Image 1 (tube, rainbow, N blue to C red):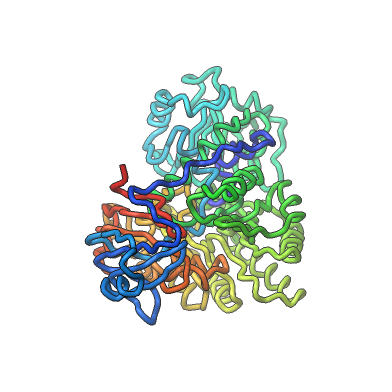
Image 2: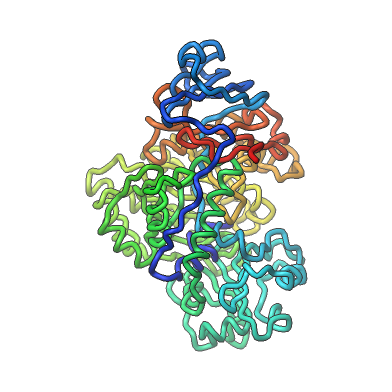
Length: 568
């Protein structure tokens, strides 16, 4: 499928940064009428979906000191909190519990927001045209950076080559990340600076695509992307902090109160720790330690972390590549590339060793698995670890759970694992996914209802910046399995669609459960954290197409308004 690896180009760029972290912190979100500590704020809306079975709907919600104080009718809530309360009228908005993206990459989004955006390019000429208009922010040192190309959208549907870039950029090194974050397209100057030539061997878990003459074509897949890392110049501390601040602000604007960051590098984590300590981190971040790189040794030494809005209790391991770049590990060969079964980025032995080390240190294990072979290996390994240690309550997560056998779907659901899936991946990949895996394996692909029926908890995300971090688009895709134009009619594999309530639960209660926070978040009831979002439409009952033009009116985290649409 599309994105997966925490090693999107943006994440790669931040990972090669300097050892120190900027102490610059984002400004605290401001509200036109800020809450006063100890004084309740009452939010009144047309409808409040609490997801609390005892009172599923309400019209007013009182908040004090970051917690929900009361829920009910306007009259009930005002009577409960007294006459000194601040009242915020939200009009015809629908309020829902805080929406969490359960699989995103903040460092990747941070860099993608300033690089050349190549999503939606229909030809290689269009890629070159966008690069020719690159803003200054798209350069890091002398390197021109971009992200988002997808050869499946081009007429020839073939991978590009360095020759497609060389005439326009003969002396400027160019590095362009594929939309899935699992392939990097370089021009000849970038290959030269990275010292990649016909004598460079493929690293384990990676491919250097080559022509008939054995020369590199310019595309590096999965672990081969690491070969370019040492040649990339480091971002400055100021660049790192400014980009990450922009990414967090963007998430708040699109209605996210939290993000599960799937594979956070140590430098980004240290920066967020500084901001969390200063009280200026605007969102809740459930960070998964980067378990692929050398950073894992420090994370193992430090162990889990709990701050104010920042938590690290999980590790992210990446077992295979992506379907779009044919790196997903399959039991049988790709239907459109005979003889090729994808890539395992970690050997089974190394994967098992890392699982054991992190479980022993108290971490939840979240594993990227796209292909059916990778998913089988994840389940085999986790079940063996659970049996050997007796630790059966880890809530280990399968990130993407994308192409699975029917037997593995049943095993995932029966053994307490969490399926972390991304609705917009299904709608992005549906034009070509069956071409990759054929008509039989596709029945176990993006199989959300099958996973639910097997007993799995679904937690939903986007895998940004592979997809947009727009949670409304995710809710739409989950309900329809259609693209923005309503195609295909009835939806792709429509029996796997989620209902409006199931989709909402995936971004709320499912995300809370997946991060061990179900007793504090995911619902709006007395005593829970005051995280919620006001939307212009009801995401459960409104026609799904309305979600595509809906607006986020307000985003509130721990009782603080971090985004308000009418704010000056």
